[in-house]
Length: 503
Image 1 (cartoon, rainbow, N blue to C red):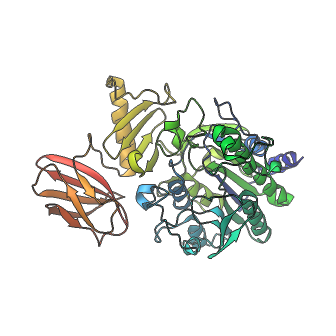
Image 2: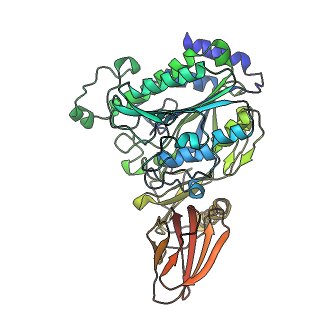
Image 3: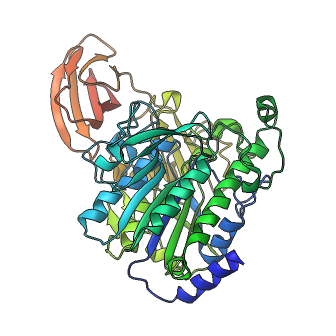
């Protein structure tokens, strides 16, 4: 009856252009396409009746890219900007959102939008030693959740509420839902609730039995290690159960005026990713298994009930979408494009390219794609080129066999159309130049092919030249603002581009 009630209420208001709907953004941690009902061809599916009801009432997106790790994706959503612009490129040393960034919550406040807003759940944008007040410093009026990227136990963890941290033994998924319900219940104006669950992120475990349909799984670590899939599915199901509980707590009028956005933050972890994705195409990589995530949007104003949408979508696009849902026109903002036109019309295009980037060891680099072709371009100069139409699982790197004429044209067109939009300089082959250390707070050493002067040009993330100089081996970048830069070096006819992070 609960799902029938929600479906009926939303159906009544679909034709109404609600000026200021409530907005609920739900982020599931480490949730790729594979365990989610409605996404083919994977076999092991979580029981998610609430999400399936939202799919029936709303719009399901099939081509959504996140970054392959949690902090970078969260940064793209909250700023509407790619990671190479903000410097948030991994969940460790590059996970601090710069204080000067305009967050979604701060933007809504600056607009005098009339919205109350919060973040409940996982933050993970405060660096390796997070300040408990940092979410509030970044413009979040109310924060209640986990500062770091994970908890060591779902029943023994640290809860931070507006700068005050205390231990909690409540089950995390339930506790976060309770916090969201309580906060929503206190609001007297339209609200925007960012609800970021830790589940189904590790540690894998059996949630309380009433939260899932996987049955009385054994709880011994050996059992979990031997067969992790049912535990992962149980954790996914616990998220669905708790979102359902939250929606059921709303009054009929609130539910009828609430837009729900449900998304995963990156691909599924290697231990539980399903074929045809291989484990080395999972979370943390720039392959489809690492960057493609589910997205469902339902509520007032979405007239395409029960439909699928194949348009290209970046997680950055949630920024512009949410702002436009509040009644403020924002068709484009930084790297963000509003999805609102897709809510009522088919055949619309909001962007022609997708972009993802990461800086995490051997997989550091970026990926771009259009409707058919995809290029992975790593920082060491390694590239892979795929035809996603005929090879959606990225089993054949076309560069290995040499490109035919049409493939070369597609490769060149992809570079021309998508690279300039991201301000990433092109480079043919591996760089023969290295900057050490990288990231750095200031003084760096350049390793070059020869012991001769090096011509250096430094561009910021937007592509603007910020410095040009000649060096021998070292340069002092202390006075550069923290952020992401491209350092182009030339010596004796040899040229290289290094992506550099100034701390």
